[in-house]
Image 1 (cartoon, one colour):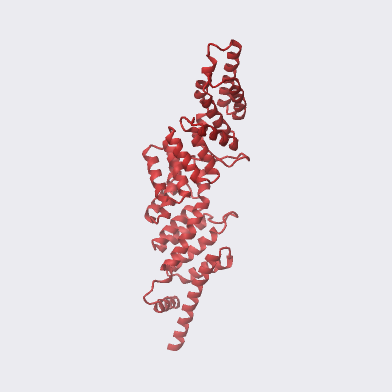
Image 2 (cartoon, rainbow, N blue to C red):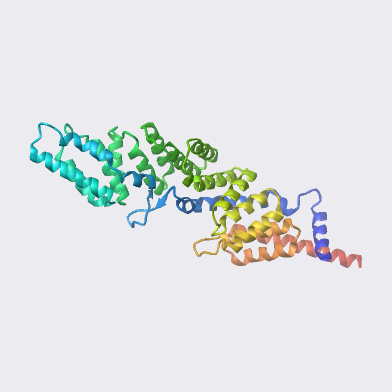
Length: 383
């Protein structure tokens, strides 16, 4: 222990007038910049695990399905409104009226039963029977776009939505909203953002849901201040409690990116109270915040909790484990535990799956080695 203290003293002597290495800006920048990219790569999986957005299992698509939209389709009041104009036309022959009425009832039942593909076929047959003068064709086309989306026929749904939007007939903004979800899945966040704003302009009633999706898009567009404005707006609009986890997560990650570390810690703590940190990521991000605040002891505890939860252990986690080990080493150094710091840094170097981290870890090991050598020479001289 005395030897370790001598090493630290010698290191501080040789760097008089400078910050200890673990407090130097470049070290903290390395730790924080690396985590920024990682947050973006895993935000989608975190967000879609909530009730706000769901990833479709359909092989034809990885588009985002909105549960509220699917629920609305179970009550096809609009469909009745759209085709009854044709059914009750006095000039229509009785036989044709009966056919339209039968098709409408059939489509309604198929929608209520969740048989969206069959409902699309029935609706196409209905559309083939009526004219613009006889029925609200565009309302029927909007419903058709919804059905295609809910059935997982995403490209066809996108085309159907575009047809409605370009015709200036997206009354209620439904098609703009659906197309925004498709664009989110395609990682076209700018386009999705435009469609969400278009949905609101056309009267889409779920303003709170749009606010959550806008926050989601703006996170990927790196407009973190806007993310926080939209999440605040969603809360003010009375967003359902089922969106709370999603909103908190977006806030926590945006606050971290904006270096509002205390706020991010508060948000992450609330998330941990809501749900078990199954992969250790929340503990990791909280550790990063404490590291930035130079609370090395608490940071070390958070990183150990992340390690215990299995952070970075999955084969698909890339270099997460290496990042965790590096930050654990920085935290150990900040706690004046050079042996622990060296142990973590050696692991980072040996893993060699991230050149930036490996070089940084080696530099820190070299600094420790030089300090130890200087302490040894000084001891020999004094003896």
